[in-house]
Image 1 (cartoon, rainbow, N blue to C red):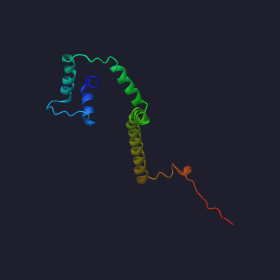
Image 2 (cartoon, helix red, strand yellow):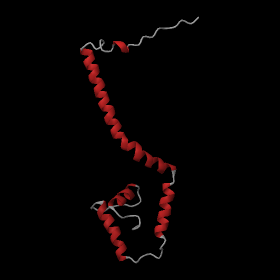
Image 3 (cartoon, rainbow, N blue to C red):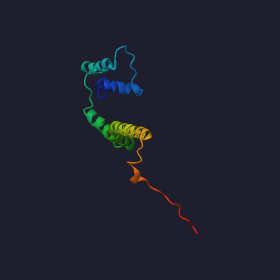
Length: 124
């Protein structure tokens, strides 16, 4: 477990996924300290390839298409979503202000060249 848990974020993630149960009254940081403190009192394992195994598992997990899609969404879509929402809000406020202005004052004199007329064609 010490190879998996290093920070309180690791404990939080494992607790939310149901891997570990934290019944300590303190925060997840205290549980991370507890796990990291256990490694100092326990002898090192006789598996020197543990880091290589963890890297292999992470590499396998990172190759899955669902993980790649989630990383793409988090990196490109969700980060730009705030900016797109801000720009849409500003444009909607400007258009609403323009509509309110044009309903009070006659704006048709400014937009007369933009009027498009559609004439129906007869089919024979």
